[in-house]
Amino acid sequence: MERLMLGDVEVLRVEELRGRFGSGRVLVPDCPPEVWDAHRKWLEPDFWEPEDDQVVGVVQTWVLRSEGRTILVDTGVGNGRRRPGSPHFDQLETDYLGRLAAVGVRPEDVDVVVNTHLHGDHVGWNTRAEDDSWVPTFPNASYLMPAADHAYFSPEGAAARPVPRDDAGRARREEQRNIFADSVEPVVRAGQAVLWEGGHRVDGHLTLEPAPGHTPGSAVLRLASGADRAVFVGDLLHTPVQILEPECSSCLCEDPVGAAASRRRVLERAADEGELFVPAHFGGSGVAEVWREGGKFGIRGWGEQGSGAGSGRGSGVGA
Image 1 (tube, rainbow, N blue to C red):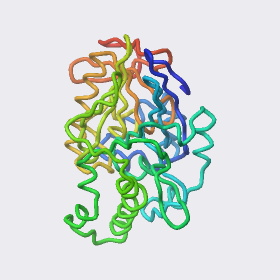
Image 2: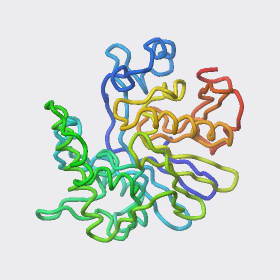
Image 3: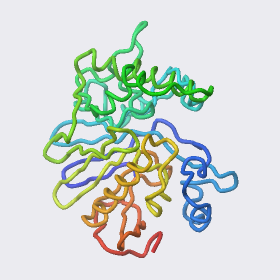
Image 4: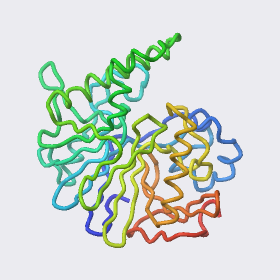
């Protein structure tokens, strides 16, 4: 899916990078190995490479054109960032801005940036390097950031948490300081950040709602236009097996139990109300149609032509 019309809202998918993002059994440690093996036929090769247990993923931006405005949902990793805890993101160089231009989006055209949360692969292109400093990439945009994440990941919030003792922990701490310094604080300093809490209406079609757990401020963006519905879920999950096993959180979640509760709640509504389910990192189709029967979930298909997902049990994955 590269382009989708949902009611009056145009949805475009712009990838920054695609690749192997690590072991599935490490990424989702509580997911039983037999779940991966049972669904190997459709997970391979777009979502998982079973020979060496590698999750296939993307870092991407969803571009929405709604009510005459251009809205970006998450902004990837960014170029030239020091990311000691994430070697595949460290000092990255991509043609992300060129890819935006290819779908008709120049930096000055962007009206709103939505950061579903403040991890480094969702805020990187918030800024760009100019001389010896970082400045907002999108000069005319308001940047919607969860206030809870801003408080949690700020230097003051980080200082209140225990200092990691091992080298990996120290690298992650350094990386988070870098993320805040190069991709968050410059936007706040420029007066372009909107730190929201409790919920935020973007326009007549789009609403932000809290879905905490992956981070304290993690959010979903709901779209409702005409008969079509969708929910952009950020890092509520990283692989389709988490639709089948919603209790299994990733190793990247700050609060795994809270993330599982948010995941289940959002999945229930998506299945019951026919919302297309749009995660941030799926390597194959970026849009899933989900069903549920009681507490069990499955995938009816991959969205292509508007929602049409309906509710109830389907005949797809997990049926």
